Amino acid sequence: MRWLIPIAAMVALALLHSSPALAFSSREAGLVVEVLEELARARGESVYYDEEAADDWYEFDSEESGLIPAAGFSRPSWREAYERTLKGLIALVPEDEFEEISRGLTEKIGRIGGLSDSQRAEIVAEMKQAAERLAGVRAEGAAYAEAVKPYEQRMRDLAGF
View 1 (tube, rainbow, N blue to C red):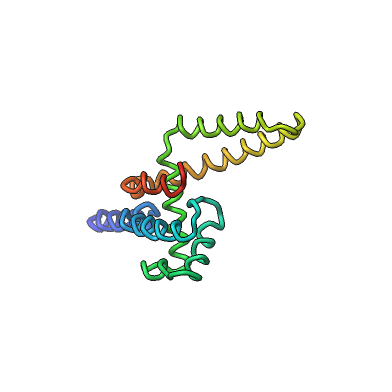
View 2 (cartoon, rainbow, N blue to C red):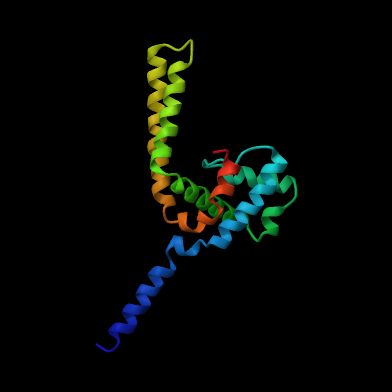
């Protein structure tokens, strides 16, 4: 019985230590932001989120200045930190703003000339699927939002929203 408490404490500590949110710090998010500010300026593009974005930025950096490795990131650790930073940012977007963006895109599709009703419906359906995937990203990003919060405005500026 006397070993039960220390064992339970060690198990709890191991579970907490393995949490992805605890493994991602505000310092790490700050490094990602600093690197992206330089790279976005050099590339002349906004920062974006998709499955290949981290690798795209890594490739660009490897042809340019090597800021990512200089900041202490390997390719896999950069991919992880980039994705966590962007997911955290997406999670920080208030729900009403998130919905407004979606509505605005739907309205713009409705105003595009030369599309049939079925084409419009297909585009809107694809957008709804993308919004559902993004909602999943938002939910996952909630674990990283606190680490990204100090850099929210800088990241919004980099992402263009």
